[in-house]
Length: 320
Image 1 (cartoon, rainbow, N blue to C red):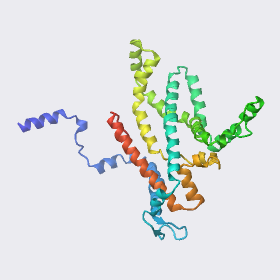
Image 2: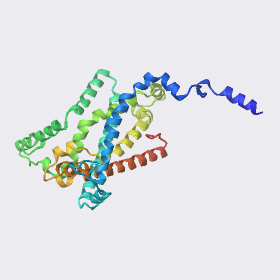
Image 3: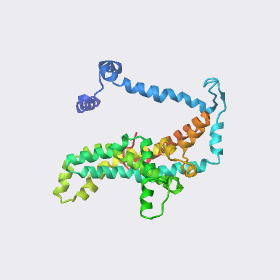
């Protein structure tokens, strides 16, 4: 009886799924030229991602540039304790989370909406022109962006000059604490939204046209097709990018804030990245900065794992 079962199973298993006769090393040697293509990528991650991780040690040391990383005194978790004892940490953490929340609520959906609108354009020449225009700000440096904002919104900028001609009250938004975060958000949307639509447009290009044709036969309008065909097809991509975005919820960047912040907006504009820059670079407290960076990475890892698990509970594949 058992021989009959084994024979039946052997016949039912496709040839491609049967255990290969060659060993793993033999198959790797057979495809050695394909594996060679991996070497540049592996070298990049080893040199720029894994080797610098040795520097994490200074988070547990009283690091001195004169004695070096191998001869500095070990202080254990003293710098981590210093983070939580800092009286400004609550305000700095609030500023960081507030800016990240604004980006998640407003900047992230804008990329999806822009991709959907571009996808609805039927004139390819017009569509490519619009795409090129919205991509361009990504290649403009933050220095140029902040320079343009200063030209328009400073005390003697174009906006205030026009308000003066119309005899309307003038104001300097660049020194207003209430406008600091909205300006950061609007600058980020203008600069990065077009570039962020690339992944969504790539996902949209993979949708089967037969789904749209079936919807048209059933009498669905373009809005109905977008709601019942396009958005469900984007759901996995949106979930994946949202997971990755949550992993960087404490990363607000430094260049934009460093160029925008001033004495009047310092309290509302100091985020974790800017604080680490001030403590680590300006005050040369490298160990404290390393501890802060490690603390941020751990929080990001926890958020990614939590978001990935939550995504799987909603029926999506998740990031891993």
